[in-house]
Structures are given as structure tokens and as C-alpha cells.
Image (cartoon, rainbow, N blue to C red; front, side, top):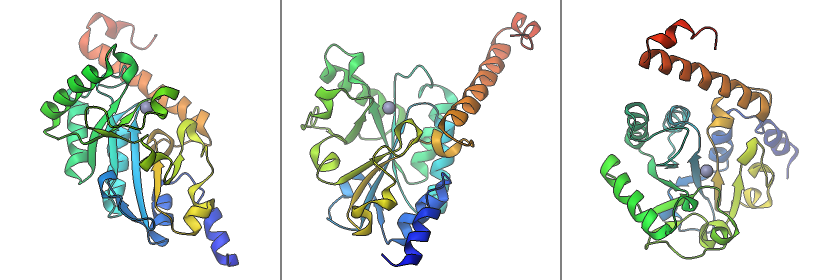
Length: 244
Ligand SMILES: [Zn+2]
């Protein structure tokens, strides 16, 4: 690799999201949805599993739109941390769809005794809420059984099937670090191989020196939001809002 390229690669290791997109774009990568993965080289399926917050997801979606790229967003329908039925989250998810991104379900099979029945319920709800046909899902914190589960569920593909998870190189920023190394450092990136990249908005849309600082800052924000919601919903709470 020429010296200049190495310098660029190290600069691209910031957690500034536009820089990361530029890294892929400079290398000539085409951003595709999972059903658009058709080549051995030059494509990247950019995936976002939304575990915390649709507001951060929308911020990310706007940056992608400005960069002229598209990504696949997967949302939990039964999260304890956000609620696609709520007015704000519903609006955010529809806005992400309107920006041209793919929206679908981030499915937690452990919530159901029968995960086929569970997925059917969620697909119907998702379709009703967002007028979107579900043809691929991602799984939330899949255990070994589901990581090895190489079949579609109810004829719906999922992102841990071998063709998306093993046959092409997979990168993830889970826990706020690049668990399998930074994509730009990989042989596959150097060879312009097709990639699957999972990115969680919380690590990119919240400022902080490291993952712990980002979590600290984000948690504080959520506490403030919760306080605000309590005030909106309860007159007596307003007397103690500053003290709790
Ligand atoms: Zn998840």
C-alpha cells in the first residue's frame, strides 16, 4: 500500500460519521440494501440496529442522505427504551423511510415461546404502522442458536444467514469499539470486497472521548427527558422535578 493511503486510513478512524462514509466512498463502494447485494466486489450493506433511540437514528439518516447514500434501519417493536407506536418515534421512523432508507424489524426472538408466531405478529404490526413490506429482519442479541440459524424465518431473510454474515466480511461497532477491527484496515477493504457493516447510531451521534463517556452523556440526556415527561404527565411531580 502506498504511504499516502496508510495516512488516510488512520485519519479515517475517527468516530465522526461523515468521515467514515467518505472512507467507503473514496474507495468507490456502492451502498446497497441487503436484497441488492449481488457482487463479490464494490458493495457495502450498511446496517443500523436501533437499540436505544430513533432520534439518533434519524440524525444518522440525514447525514447519509446528505452524502447520497442509503442504509438499512432495523427497529425493535417491543423495546423498553423507545416505542414505535409513540407519536415521536413513529414520526422519526417514517422520516427515515422518506429519506430513502430501508426500514424493517429488529427482532428479539427471546420474547416469544414460538418465535415464528412472534415474528408474524410483529410483521403485521410493522406493516400496519409503516406501510412497509418486511423482506429482511435483523435479530437482537442473537444467541448461538440464532447465529447459526441459516434459514429464513417465515420466508423472511435475516442478516445472520451465511450469505450476509459469513460469505462476506462482517464488521460491527457493538459496545462502541470495532470488534473485528476497523473496516478500513482490513484486507477485504483493501481488495474492495463486498462488505456488511453494522453501525449503532449511539456511538456516532453522541459526542464523547470513548464509549463510556458517550453512554454517560446519553444516559444523562434520557434522565432529563424522563423528568420532562413526568412533568408533562403529573402536576404534583413538578414540585419535586428539580430535586429528583
Ligand atoms: Zn440489538
